[in-house]
Image (spheres, rainbow, N blue to C red):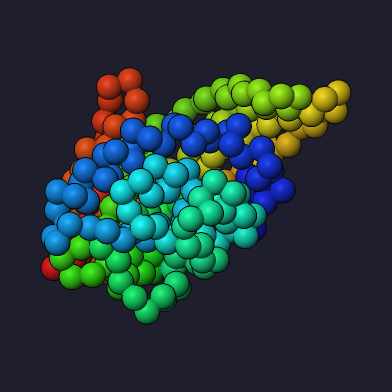
Length: 241
């Protein structure tokens, strides 16, 4: 079942995930693609592009094609990225029959809950990456870096206000998933409603990531990504020979 955040709660999405929060990462992704892709990259495919917050920054450098499963999120992306191509598709099965200089899968990769799903998404990235091109796969965490966490969000926009408790936890450490529970209080004018939205996401050790991405055909290396406050984590830079 599709999480509410990508369906009925889409009108509130930018209060949860402001586009400006993606600029530092986009600079990192752009620099990595420019460093490893030859000839210099011009085209980019993002799988699981969501609201288009990455593309808002990446399109300054690349001609972007954006693919996402949710029609509501694509509609939101079209509002801020009318100059980008949009495709409704599942990252596990999409085949555009053309290749790109660069492919990006941001945190949408976290919805791959099994190794089979992960390999399917990695294969989609590989077949859409031209020889000499590269893909960046950027999960929120690996099994080694996962930590239970609680975050409080508080945003206002005119007569709309959002307060949210985001609780990340792993009820079954023996399996390959974890849970992110969102408890929303949403106020518009004098109307207030409470909403619970649960996301079940995949959790794999780095060995699994490296093995699956290599099986898809990539040469894999770590990429340092800024995560705020001067901190970095390691994501996956994948070159296609």
